[in-house]
Image (tube, rainbow, N blue to C red):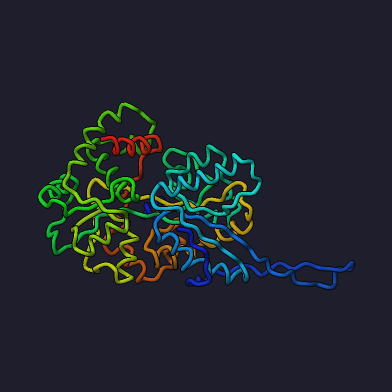
Length: 397
């Protein structure tokens, strides 16, 4: 359980699933010289521009679950949701847009709230693009995970609250994979014995493929602790060309994204591949994935990651951004939307979230991958310099 605690443009939307989150009564003001004629202020009609990196499920999270809840709290609120794209490239686009507005000297930026990957935090902070908003959050006391303080070697304390912690695992068809590999050595042997039946999305089309390539490198190099904790040592990278050539020589099928891996598995075109646990469970819930398929994490492990809620420094609608961020990171939303609906592990303190989760929701979350699995085999991605260099090395080799 320590992992849980440590662990296109789309315009909105007036549909979704409301949570039970409540907000304080609208403040009142007085008019007149004697203060006896009290009048209630008209409720604020908030506007908010939200941009999220990630696959389409990240857009669905907002549009189908949170926006209507926000509109119920604040009648007349308008929330515009934009998806910047899957993988680290989606976060890079958010950085580039904010940087361009800063460089142009704009006093108000048109992104009020963003959901980003770990990979973008160093450049976002180094370029002074983010507000240190967490001390103003209604949920600041629940921000306890290690990656809310340090992310891939960058000090992010005060800038982020994790929206969730997600984990990559290997999805498989038990009718085809009779004995699931126990470790990466057995996995590579299985891939060689079953050409093209293992699929993943390379390193450009979604983070599940990045996680697999990273885990393979950790295993072959034996440098997990050094790469994930630092400090940077360029000498470690001398091992990578041989490792990555061995990885890319495996007879695999390359898919077109995180969704593509799930789709090919469900259609029987592959029998195994790395996927995000939450996406797999969502597809099962929606009837898009065979419920008899399973999930496993191999020894020595495979990375997962949080996605962060951040507020740009010069957000035009900062008050609305803070209100919406409080809703996203509240124990109620974390329990009902993050855990129960999306099968993510909570971004805030699990001890205040899990008591609000139904027994069915808990059972689904830990059906195939237990808390012990996560504690033992849930890895972190490498610090930023290694992370960037590894992705470049993969392309070159």
